[in-house]
Length: 153
Image (tube, rainbow, N blue to C red):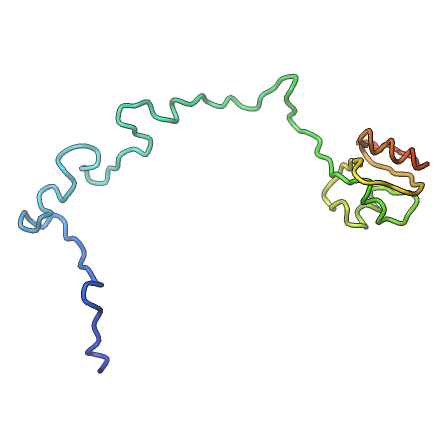
């Protein structure tokens, strides 16, 4: 077998449909597009939202009016980095602040506010400085003989 004798497998290559080349071709006159309507026009497509007389979805739904302002909405909520009491055992210092939490990898560099949560136990006396404490975390730290200091936000 030589290179010039190679050919594709029978039926694997199909010639393209030649549209608008006379009635004998089977795709003459209207070029396979039917008689009238938006889809028969040259360059025109049916509108993506057209639903054939039914009210289109983007008109059925209410418009968004911007950010809701009310007593129960917060434009810029405070996002805290959570740290559980059980994770504080990893830190050997007696006074634990934000810097110590970052050094231990419990808080990321970008996270500004830290909240201490009450999951786990603490078995030594520590003073913890953070922006917020859950009630159970505060009780557990004070029950162990430690102290809690709230930082400015």
